[in-house]
Length: 445
Image (cartoon, rainbow, N blue to C red):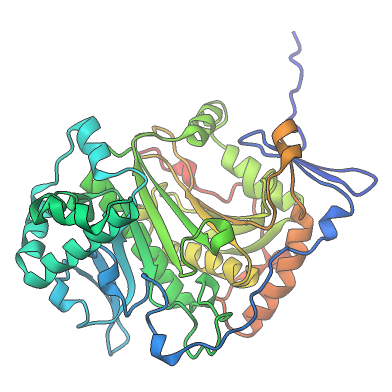
C-alpha cells in the first residue's frame, strides 16, 4: 500500500495583487497584509520636544536612579567598578542604596500579577528561611523599616485606601503586606538611564538599542540569572514569563527601560500547544523557524550561536531571535552563547529605533517539560490596533509583511554595523543559513 505524501502548508502566500497571507506554524493564527495598507506609516506620533529640567536629572519616574526608595527593597543590583569590571551585589541595605550606582536593579513589582498571597493561600507557600532572615534584617534597620512602610502606604493608597484608614491599621498590620517585597514572584529588572547620557529634551529616551552591546549583554545576563533565582525561590512555579514593554502603547507604565519576570503555576496555552506538536515532530523549531525563514530569504542576521529573522504569522510585525545552543534553559547557556543572543536582540532593538512601541517576549522550555525546546526571543512592533474585523473573523491585519519588515531593517543593520553601534555579525545575504542550525535536539536532559 502506498501512503500519500503529506506536505506542510505554505506559511506565507503572495497573491497577484500584492496581498500577503500568513499562517503561524505553531499557533495557526492567520494574518493578512492587504495590498495598499502595507504602505501606511508606523503610526508612531512623536511628542514635541520639551527641554529637560536639570534639577530633575535622575528623578523623572519611580524607576530612576535618584528615586531608589520609590520601589520596594531591591533583591540585587549590577554595578560597574572603576576598573571597568562588572559585579552583581545582593542584599543591599537601605543605608547602602546610594553607596554604589546601579546599572541594573532587580526589585519586586509593586503591583504583582500573582501576589505572595496567591502562592500562600493556594499552595501553602512560605518565605524560605534565607528570605525571612533578609526581611527581618531589612526591617530591623530604621531606614529599612521607614522605606518599607512608605512603599506599603503607596501601594495601599493606589488600592483606594485613605491615609486615615492606613494609619488605623497600625505599623505591624501594614508590614504584613510586605512579604511580597522579599519573597514574591513578580520582579522588575530596571536599567539605570531614563534618557540617554547628555540628553537635552524628552524625546531622547534610553532604550535597549541605545545601550552599548556590552551593557545590553549585562542586562540580558542579569535577567537570565534572575529567572533562575525565581525558580529557586518558589518550587511551585512551573514557568517564569519574561517580557519587556517599551513605551505606553505597548503596555509600559513608565517610559523607562525595564523587563518584567512573572512566576506562574502553569505552562501556558501556547506552550501546551507547541509541546503537542513537538511530540509528533521534534525538529519543528528548525523546520518552522530558521529553515523556512532562510528558504524565504527572511534571515536578518546571524552569529555563531544565534540567528534572527523576520517572523511570519504574527498579529504584529515580529522579529524572531533563536538561540542555536544545545542548552534549552537560558541559565544553562555559556557566557559566549548568552552574548550571542544578546548581540542579536540588541541589534534588532537598535535597528527598530527607540520611537517604536514594542514588546520583547522570551520563550523557552518550561521547567517541567520533558522535551527539548530552544530559547527564542520575539520582538513585536505594536504599530497597529486590533479592531472589529479581527474580532469578527480571527484574521488579523498586519500592515507590515515579513518582506517589508526585512527591507526596513537590513539597510539599518548594515549602517549600524559600519558605525560600530552593534556587535559584529553576518547580515542578510552574508548569513550561512545552514539547515537545522538549532542544536536543541542534542539536549535530551
